Length: 465
Ligand code: ARG
Image 1 (cartoon, rainbow, N blue to C red):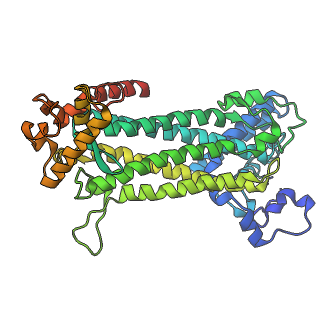
Image 2: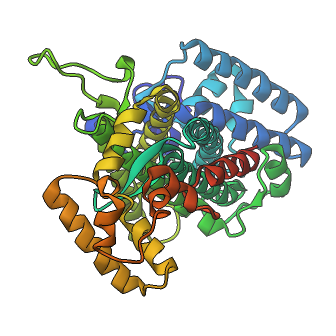
Image 3: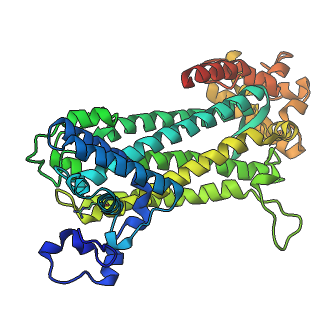
């Protein structure tokens, strides 16, 4: 390499070219502005590669020692923020290699033996993504735990359950929170599953066909904590299905967050007034002094769109590529990084926010009382007295209609009034018509009964450990 890299990256391959690369093309093809985020993984991969080259007798002890010393300094420069990134050196890999050579001379030029940027970048992304999957998994676990705490506190807090956003049957707020805990626990499982396929080593594939050097790929895999090596060199450098899979799992995380957000927004509306979100998660209006807006859930719902977009970007990026590596793949990074950042930030905020919401039990209860939520219970009661379900449904529908006309609830009817709809109705119906009676009666695995909610909380907590 020349001593002045800043002018032109084609110094790295200048032997083949007769004119310097165009300035705009240089900027167009460079990735260092965003892939520098992979720097520490790039160095980790390089050190594992160098260690193997030395163990195989391909690199001398002196060269290997120089490489370690040089890389240690580069790590310090990056951590302290004074590493000089140069667009002219195109990407993170060439920036680091050039600096290494500047620091230690020829040993730096030997590092790339038996390797290509193609297997190098694939390794970097996998190391990066593996660490981020672990971070996101920890956040998902925290979110589940927060939801379980809320569920436990509100195992018996009655709220209306909805279908079609119309009051359907009473449930408890705890039961409702548990539904989200289930969704996020499946997200944890999806992340773990995706991690299995991320955690394979591409290094050794070199440019596409492998290398003529006597490398030991299993050794590098062990050093870097991979579960094994990618078995086909062409596949190793070209496919990004593992990143696509992660983005798909992330899109489902955000889908769940978005559904929860939609509910938080509704519940915070004074017409519902089911919850309050602390001020630190909300903003006011610059014109309307009375406003307190649920910005965080709104933004999270909105950001779900870009996460879906990132998934589409990667799928589309991959679909037409012939084997093996193509420069198209450089475009995998920004959607992937954006997905990681957005999902991580969103989860971090939700862990804090969900633990801090105020639950307005009275409003929830009032809403459940107003929606004929126990109508199904009355129908079930009649079935237990011998009426076929369809007939019972019809009887209760008529009773509800009468209540709507009178502006009262089923439980406001006297026993005599109820018996006009069916002589099978007796004094014991009153227990069935209460909200508590309704939820407690659903006492089976997965049901809304407080007892079941508490059991489910305990079981999920154990699973999360
Ligand atoms: N910056 C490139 C990327 O992100 C690194 C690999 C470049 N390889 C190549 N043959 N141009 O994919």
